[in-house]
Image (tube, rainbow, N blue to C red; front, side, top):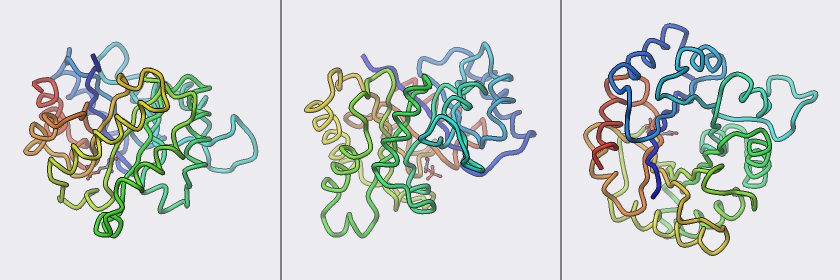
Length: 247
Ligand code: 13P
């Protein structure tokens, strides 16, 4: 039985005052059935982890460096995230693949570093609109999956997030049949390579909001969501969490 996961990606949003949202979320949902994760900007991880201590909300990073330490100005090692109180790290988000030229090999190396530090890697995959229009979605997803997920991945240390690039921050979502097609494909492809693949959580991400959450969570092989904009406010993210708990 896979425990559902509601994950929030705050991206480059949030100042100290935003920590009140996490307190409000924990107060409104003290004992959710699903796991709850918020990945704030790095500047807020330690404070958020401190405030969330003892409650249902887990805290994660949005990226880490593949190496354990060294001369990499501005970068953050996986062990530093862990030390600050993070349990998870998002890796290979399409915004990092696009803005920072991250390849599948880089994402895989980062996931290995995350695992070595004891973090759960939330590895993101997704096709662009041009790739979907060209009919190559499953080829793209399959090659990202094989290239980005390390051999040591398990259900305990890895979560996969399917985030179609064209659905991120646009208000557009794939049809439920399109989501099911990709998630069923991910499940089947993982099963050919990883022991325990049936237990790996598969999240959908891209314009998830309270009004579409329930139908997405009822879709085949969807074990939760990776939420951007709608995770910034406790009321909205709480409504998505409630829909996941009810699914
Ligand atoms: P939105 O929910 O804002 O579309 O963002 C999705 C996302 O990129 C989460 O990682």
